[in-house]
Image (cartoon, rainbow, N blue to C red; front, side, top):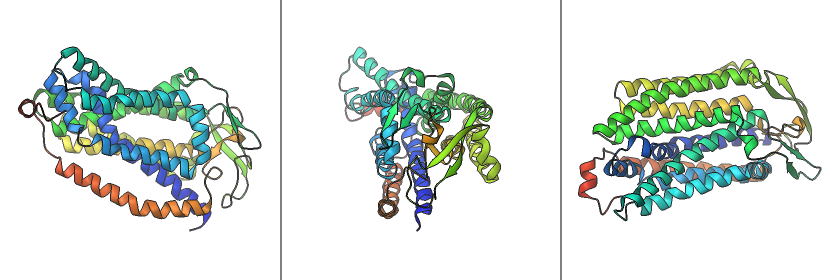
Length: 377
C-alpha cells in the first residue's frame, strides 16, 4: 500500500475509532447524564446504573484506543491539540473520574445524601465530556489559534474561555443531545415501567431537538469562511505542514460536497438517524430507536470529518500552518505496522464486545434491584 493511500486509510480508521467510541461509550455517558433527570427514585437510578454497569469500562477501550491511535498516527495533531485544548481535556478527565468511583462506591452506603452526591457526580461525569467533545469539534471549524515555528513547535494563543463561543457551544449542545438521546434509546431496551416510559418520551423529544440543532449548525457552517488548500508538495511523500499554503474562502467547508456529491450521504444519515430514533421512540420500538441513534452518531461524526477534510486542525492565525491529513502523519513504516495490528485486534475487540452485550441482554427492573441490592451497583 503506498504512502498516500495509507494516509487516507488512517484518516478513515481514526474516524472508525471515534464512531466506535460514540456508539459504545456514548450510551453509557448518556445514561449518566440522564441519571438525575429521569431516575426519580433510588431504585430507578440503580436500575439505570446497572444497565450500563457490565459494559461501561469495556467501552472505554474505544476511548483509550482512539487516543493511542491519534498519538501514533498523527503525533503533531496530538501535541498541538493537547496544548491548545489542555484545560478542556483536563475538565473532561476530572469529570470522567466520577464514573469509576461513583459506580463502585455509590451504593455501598444507604445514606441518602451520600447516594445523591454520587448521583450528581455521575450526571456530571456523563454530561460534561459529551459537551466538551462537541465544543472541541465546533472550534475546529472556526480554526484554533496556533502557529508553528521552523522546528514544528506550536505556540497556542487562545484560552479555555475563548473555546466557549456561540458556534462551539452549539456544537457542544448537539454532542450532548446526541449522546443523551443514545442513552435514552438504550434505556428503552433495558428497562420497563415508569422509567421506560420517561426514557421513551425523552427519546422522542431529543431526536427532534438535536435534528433542529444539527440543521442550524449546517446553515451556520455553510455561511462561514472555510479553509481551502491552495498549493502543496507531493501528498504521497513525507511532508511537513509548512510545505503547503492554505487560505480562508467563503463557503470553503462546503467545497467537498460539490466535488464529491456522495459526501452528502453523511449529513443525510445523521438527520435520518435522529428522526428515526425519535419516530421509533414514539412507536415504543426501543431496539429500532437504538439503531436510529447509532446511525445518528455515525452520520454526525462523518459529517464533521467530510466537511473538514483534508484539514484536521486548522490554524486561525496562519491558515498555511493548519494540520492536514497529508502532512501530520507518522512514517510509512509506522502506518504500515499499525494497519496490520489494527486488522488483527479491531475484530477481536468487536467480537468480545458483541459477546458481552449478548450475554448481558434483557430488561432490568426495580424488583430485581431490590432482590439483589447487595450484589448490584
